Length: 448
Image 1 (tube, rainbow, N blue to C red):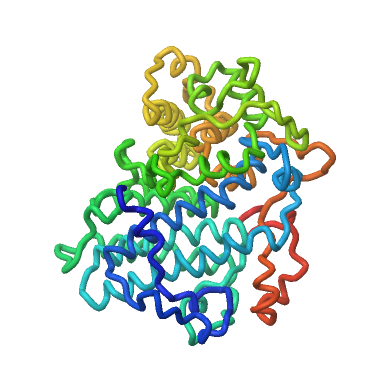
Image 2: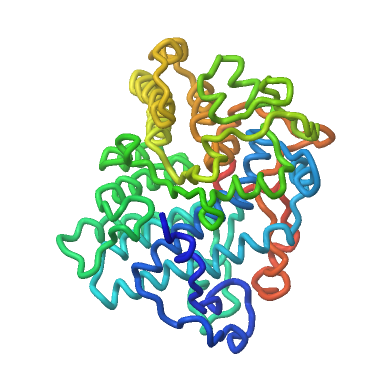
């Protein structure tokens, strides 16, 4: 972690491959290197992904799932679904110009050096990132998007075809990670797993299962997990941060500098209703010493702030966890095997508590389900709590309708996706044109 942000700011001068379609002549910076060693590309990619997930994407989605609430300035608009094309230019640009470009360059360098472990890691990260891109934007540039100066105005792929591509990426990544040798291999430069290829394979299987779940293919989701999903909390995929000013968690930085979001009333009230022991970790007390959330569209500046577990300077940005894997198993098992669903559900709650370091047998007994009383609502509600801080609850709510969220005050429906960025309209107009009427209330392809 010590030099993570020094690594992160290394420029690759590769933005010609992004979707910010600027004349490549203007992208040449004589002060930046044109080549970067693969062991510097990996941590840079991991941190850039963590920043976008814990940044504009994660913060907005957390308001729409009512884990958080916007209470001041720009966040009040986001809280009532007023997300404009200019609001997500930076996130889109960082995804394409930084993260995906770094990963593509990693794959190329891994090919050149016969280093399948690096290639496998890059493919897993690319699949993880593109899964969220589709989940938020639906049809997006991908197969045509990472060709550098050869293609500055990439065509859009359908969301369904990108899902096919990312599932193929994950299967190919597993083959890479199963190779017996790799000329170069990740080690301390890997901020997520320290070069442990077994944990990368488990992450890949969990992502395969996650994506199959989005598609409603429960059998394939269970098969992916049976091949070895995340098996305990030591396999949680996350990027940790540091306490120095150049190493701090993006949630912490935003809260420290902007402070215009609070905890959401729905989330706080849900946790209070079951005396959830995770509440003090996820939320801070208000000025009166209570846990109080701001309702969607209420703009209660006096509501509880974010808790230290995810909003401390050194807190992690989480990509996937053992708890999520168990809740995937629970949902996928539910239609055909209620006992397996209940067992996985119970294990998911226990995994979430253990992830934080909580030992509370009474709470586990209180919330435990059996084959006779397990329901989809129970599974999704506890997954909503356990996956707080990630983007998965937004996908889950759209797929299942659980938990039962109500639109923000003064609105009639909850947003279901992001608008396209203004840069696409300006610089990729021909390919963007069919999507010019898209709103945040339209659905992505799997959202039925």
